[in-house]
Structures are given as structure tokens and as C-alpha cells.
Image 1: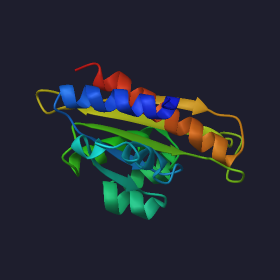
Image 2: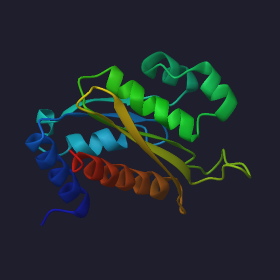
Image 3: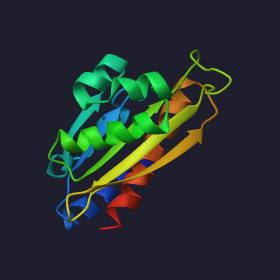
Length: 167
């Protein structure tokens, strides 16, 4: 029997194929785990365009076009950065839907304002008018580094399924 993650990805793929859509991912703290999970399912090349792993601030700027002002004012772990990452993934790919993830997986790096487990997500979709609509979500996951990253993968996929079903 398929595991839950594989079921979610298969469901996502069917929905994207039905809508003639592709997705792109922009990942920081998950280091490409969402893209790896998606591409572990046979047939995903029909609906997965590309993944950006932008762990450093420089990579976020160079690969996704994140504004230096956004990073300096709000930080890498912020709603604003997540929004720009998701938009950048759409603008720099053939995808119509994207997800971005930026956060603090730990065990170090947390602060009082942004403790370990703080993860920002953004899901963007190109509308028929080619405008980009974005939804964001902040999560505060509990667990060790691996657990936080795995929870982030599931949340990212659930959001992709939700946004793909809006079409």
C-alpha cells in the first residue's frame, strides 16, 4: 500500500495533469526535500518543472531575484521572503504553481522572535490574466531537525493540493 506522502503526491499530480499545469519549488530549510519527494513518484516529470534550493541569502537573490532590502528588513525567515521566493520560482520557470519554504529547522539558529520550528510557506499560482496570486502560512513545528523538515514537506504538499484544486 502506498504511504501517505506518496498518496498526496499522486493526488497532486492527477490534479495538475487534469488542469494542464506544472509546479516549481523554492526551498531553503528543506534543502530540496519537497522536490525529492515529488520526483520519487513515477510520472512526475509530466507536471514538475524544477526546484530551486536557495539555502543562502545570496542564492535567494541570485536564483530567485529576492530583493536585498527584503532580506535586510524582514530576514530570510519571513512572510515577505517566502512571497518573493514563490513568485521568483514562477517567473523563472515554466510552472503555473509554486511553493516556497523558508524557516529554522534547528537545532540552532532560533531567536525569541523566530524560534526553532518557525517555517514560512508561500504558494503562488498564475491566474488566467497571468497575474500571480499568493497565499502564505506560518507554522511553528515542534521536534528535531529531521521532524521539522518532514512536517514542512507535508505542509507544502497539502498547500499545493489545495491551490491546484482552486483552478
